[in-house]
Amino acid sequence: MNRDVKVHTCHKNTEIRDIKYLDSNRWYYTDDPKFKSFKALPVKCECKKRVTLSRAATLVAQGAAVKVYKPKDFRPLGDNRVDRFQVVMIVNRAQTPRVDLVTAPDIVRAYADGRDDYIRYIEEIHEMIMTERAKLMAPFRDDPTEGRLLFCFGPDQRTVGGRG
Image 1 (cartoon, rainbow, N blue to C red):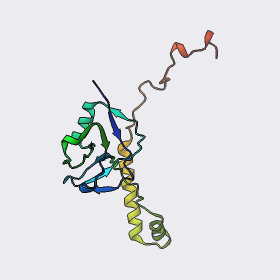
Image 2: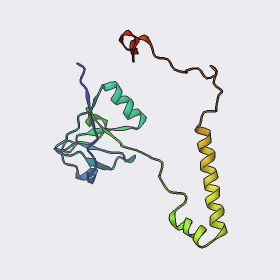
Image 3: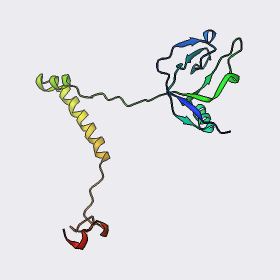
Image 4: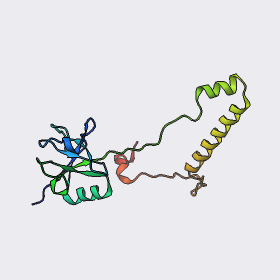
């Protein structure tokens, strides 16, 4: 039987609980290497993403997802209490911060106050940005067809009868 695994991303506002205070009616996950603190999944979940068992195992092995546990009364919580058909996706969206290198106060200090150190700073930042932009541009190539039309339209784009 090939059942899909539900991938949870609904764990934003979950409380952290110690292993001693877990409710046996809830599902929990942990990213604690000591296996002491757990976070509960919401009682009602609207997660719809599903993956195969092998993909879920790969996500857990790569550290992109963690296992879901269901405690039972007076039994130790370990790999024998794992729900194979649920995983929690650990959302890690590291983004490049969008910080202005030259701010409005820098411009005022440079040009209104006439401070040379800020003028040099702004010019250095400008040179750095222009150098990086130049790396993104393709080099110029001469026209190999010497002024002829570089793109042509196939017969399917012509008008019927050859008229415009």
